Image (cartoon, rainbow, N blue to C red; front, side, top):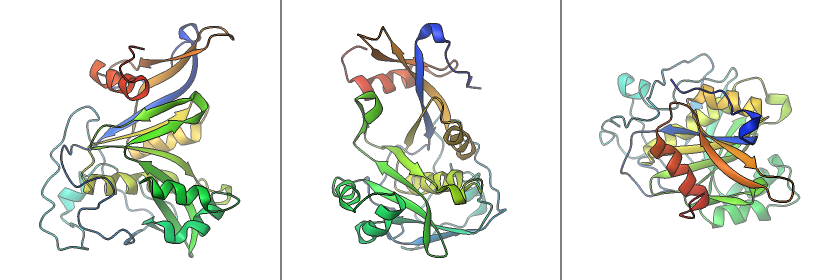
Length: 265
């Protein structure tokens, strides 16, 4: 089992960690497409409905047949659904999860506490996706997904994705709705939708001191794989990656390449 203990201070200042879920899909639809649902289709999640999510994070799993459903319908085979990654969490209150698009840019900007919808529209224009949870018609949680390259602003770096990978980022739940497991349930829903779209590896990251997000990651089935350390003195700070104990070296190398390219960091 992967050790979740962070690195010691002697190795450098621990500023954040990347987590991963392997969905076991090597091929599928193109990013931004969903195998058998329309972009705006809703999915209702009732509280108290628990399902297993016991995927080995470092071993590809059999995705199962998904071709037996008609367009707009979900597979309902209990064994198939129970084994799908990201199906292990349920919120404590009724909520409707869905993927949204530019048509709700103004409403989404308000939920994100932005002055206008320009940033939201820019994200959609460059191919990002957004998933939300609604209660009584109001956005109560949201998260963004990128399929190619995303800036890590606080590090001054970018995370470059390979085909079949996705990066979840900029997720939030207003204070009034926290503590209801909306965030891990949203992540679980997003993982299920990305699985259905053919994605096989999903990344997410958090600052070292962001414990609520890290708890949400664990509940949704993510595993911490690489810590980001800041080394050097005040005049020459350099980020480097350190794999968690038990994480295969090829996974650590994938993160190095995603962040530093082939520069050899």
